[in-house]
Length: 223
Image 1 (tube, helix red, strand yellow):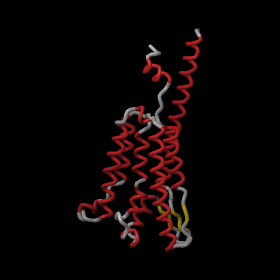
Image 2: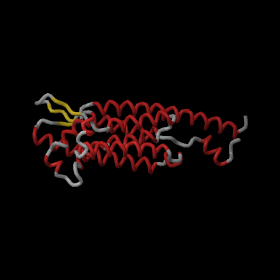
Image 3: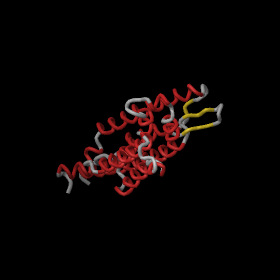
Image 4: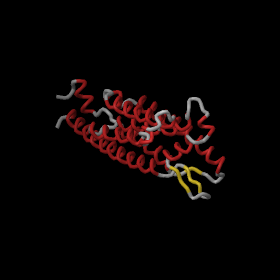
């Protein structure tokens, strides 16, 4: 075998290992996200209660300080937007398109307001949920349509990751502070940590990358 053939074979083997690592990282990230979204984000031992991310955001919408915010219910919006950024990250993966579309749709459905919205369409809390559900669907589908060179761009990774941690961090800090004003023993649960690790796994390791075969084909070096 020629030297170029040996290099090409080794490169393709490395590509297969990288793709395998990214597949398992994406699976791990998805498992962490699901576990984090249903796990407690705030724990109050004294009252014996726990709240996941959506429970905490819903509770925040009842607080007078949050209702008086401008934009309206901004703290709850910051916390609920975790599903929006997860939709972005999921859509960037290298899974089959139908798998990514299914994930985006499920995330959007999880944000839909309850049936009471039909009878009370003027409720600001329900309006926010409907708006976020629509944005999550549009954002995910838009990310699906991005060219692969954009989906594999580190800039996209940093922008989505930065937006996720800034908005979620603000909403969580706000929610925990409000909860502690009622219950001093309120503390952080494990949910936020699991979701954060899941997003890192998706964006840092599960996102698509150009393999040497693709780069070579693009450059005309492979036949």
